[in-house]
Image (tube, rainbow, N blue to C red; front, side, top):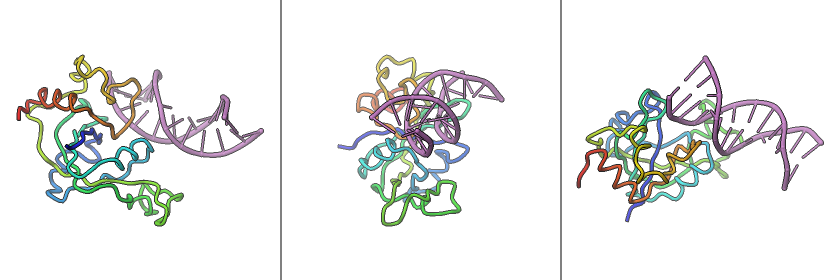
Length: 156
DNA sequence: GCCAACGTTGGC
DNA sequence: GCCAACGTTGGC
């Protein structure tokens, strides 16, 4: 059984449509520089399901579903001095940062805004909604997943 | 642009 | 190991 996650991206940087344009092979989720988020990515398995969340945008919220297609491997941007994500403390033999590959699965029928999520008592314990949460990669429980699917107009 | 909340760094 | 200073995230 797959696990469920939520991953944030600023649409100005990398939007859900950008992911859709990457096709079947998906895209590496590079640039995560937070240990807790990194650890969550390292625990992901192929086939895990992901809510794609748009952050730092006029109406933040969940826009669609993605899927893990490659399990954690070293984030190449940490070795690239030209990259904004370069980390001089990392080395090829001892990488500090990891990424997974994810691919587009489908849009939600309805965008589910953060404001709407906050109004749901069923989601009161969601990691995303916890006070001061800044995690760009967070776990979602199966119950939370189903609830948000309903809000998103997906009835499998 | 503001700022609360949080993670990280580094001096001690 | 403590904790002040600093940087970042991200909603508003």
